[in-house]
Image (tube, rainbow, N blue to C red; front, top):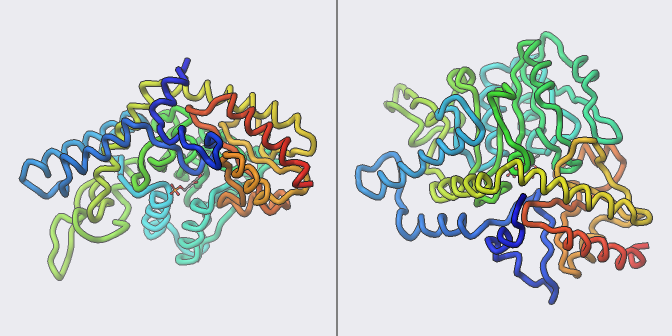
Length: 405
Ligand code: PLP
């Protein structure tokens, strides 16, 4: 059970009024709001601890380094990675995927090779692979999905060839809310000796993730979608892959020895962490993990599922409203259209009622093409949202529907 009133007191931004109405924040798939405990750790870092890490003998630098590395341990435990050095800090999911596409691609992609992705990927799990394919003469193969928003696993099996080098799919679709059967997807790939990258951007705040149980080769996520600040993210990678892969960026921190003739690289994970990292954001990520663990990830998931079912039922009852993404296993994301209204118009009118939803293609243009629509309106819920707020959305839609007709 979650104590919703107590949780909401942690999020001062939820007290905002928008056009004299209480804010209803339903854009959580884009970014979650931050609890006071996270904001305090970030502010305190700059007030009391600000220092560059890993290369100072002085007190502040040592203390900041220790706290930074404690965050790595917290992340390792949160996703149950075998080793601390399998956790690489990045700026976010996008950077994590680009790192793998670039570095893995350099070593393992050659002319005629193939990369499998799905038809419901965020652009950040499409374009980095396209760039790598373009560079090395490889090509993309795409897993199709049903009208409901369920991946076609038979078609997936048929996509493998002796040229398949990697599979990259999301754990949860940011547009359809589908929770993909990644364990099965990984098993199938491994039966062909092919590694799998999971884009966990939309899963990490809603589902318990155990990278060892999943046996994924890479798992990527962003702090800002799990109550932490923007600017910090994670790449989990199995040691066996990270060890082999060449550095992604060159600079300070990632080297062992530099001469003009030759540079040798630092050990994992530092080989992939060139330059000054987002130390304060990392410290606050640890606090966001503790925030979620205190609530219990299973409790968060159960509460959000309750919100999802309530909202799906209420919204489905509205005349002319179509929901895109009706897979049996979903997280708390609802994409919809009202009649023939453009999503942008719907979003603008809802905003005037204080309701924040996202409109457009949600960085998943191929999904829009699949359904032949320009975009959707997306309401996505987090642990601080309530059924009353969903009622406000439903009433709001009923109110604006005649204006959109
Ligand atoms: N993958 C998915 C499924 C997402 O929803 C997002 C962001 O919305 C991303 C990747 C990119 O995340 P970021 O912008 O934090 O790098």
